[in-house]
Image (cartoon, rainbow, N blue to C red; front, side, top):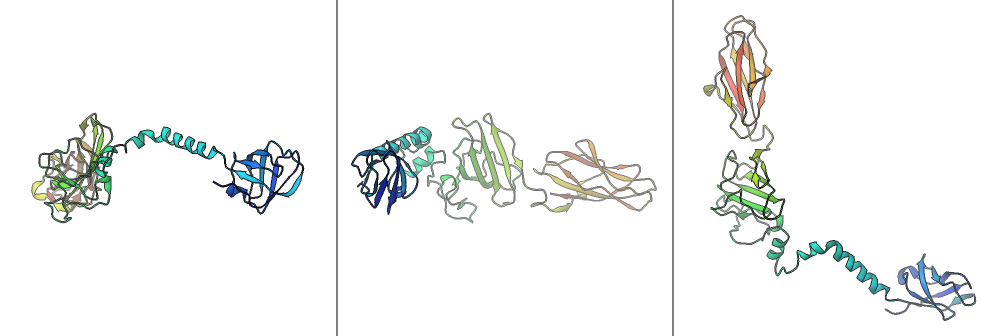
Length: 325
């Protein structure tokens, strides 16, 4: 780098301030540079206040001068600071940078940083044919924009790199997911052996459905349907398969909602009561006149819970029983 000599400077004997005219110290000089004053002596630049003002050490030793020639020479401090910065980066990010070492191709690099190999084997190109199981997803988890199709001998419980996969009727899938075909997002939370992980599953033909499960101490907990109640559900009349005062179990794989209607046959204060897991949770309106209808309150039934609707204080044959599932 050449020396900087543009403009002229003024210096006062015994002072450390150098004032320039037509100079640009802030853009062309830096602390640590060498300043050759109008007196021919060398000084160290210790501060650059602006384009026209800087400070030197020691204080100016020559006679006071106005409009004198000068020179600014870059020192090896540039190289030293660069080396210091590089050493700081290596110390702070060395372990991360090491993951990139020895990666001869993109697939190896993806594997090194835990994003899967991105291999093209078993990939398909169709988005609509369920037999191919392709899903275009730009760059997700380093998989090159597609889901990887799991083989017929695979199991969703198996350890695998984080990424997006297509499961084809494989063991380990959510059994209430309508179809064995679906997309699996696997997120490994620990290195091999994989002790912790999270999996999300969406059925191919029921994209509204969302399932999740976690692995703790190398064991997966049961799948949980996290789809909002009412989504992909319909009110159905199940009267033909339901009776009052009888226990049933919600095996739909997600919460459902129930409600029933009955007709009174006497003048007692008849009411319908909903029980969940053996406990009373709701009472419906009552009737004290024969021939009137009574109804239960609509109640949400958790997945796996037992439930029943019972008659209290009289007789009321079931008229209709509806369930949202």
